[in-house]
Image 1 (cartoon, one colour):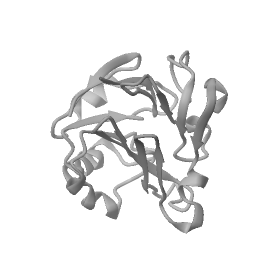
Image 2 (image 1 turned 90 degrees about the vertical axis):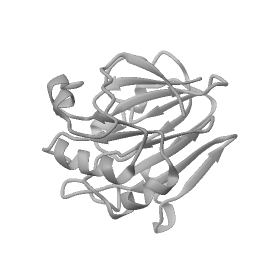
Image 3 (image 1 turned 120 degrees about the horizontal axis):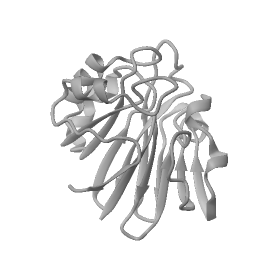
Image 4 (image 1 turned 45 degrees about the vertical axis):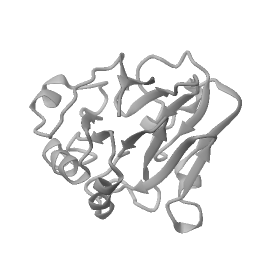
Length: 198
């Protein structure tokens, strides 16, 4: 069973069935005790790339926005059955030439991590990919607000939608998450780990 730990802000940890550990945007919260096999960084802002929190296993693969956008395109990566596809991300505060989101496929489960963004053209194509879990930012200051994040959730059409990155300088804002008007909403608080199902 794939497990997802929401660490807070924009940080998550995923554990595959075979025990491999993937961190996305390490920065916030707890749960950095397990050494990483893969680390994904959506962009260079300090609250998304605190790599020093993560102990890396030998052979750990770190994919930053630079690798994800190498050659001027959104690149794909495959790590022994774990697939990672970089996606469009950006807004007025986040240059799309330096920011990405990621779609991960782990043990048949597809997970979209939006990174810091507003609505993108590419999101209209995601419904075809049958995403199981989609995580959207929604702080309304540095990124889209929760209303726009709900629109994005409609576009992407994931089985489960999770609102993260909802309050700058805080791990989470439960009130905003509870008010979020997205379909198939799933509320996960910092420190909570869930088992993912497809």
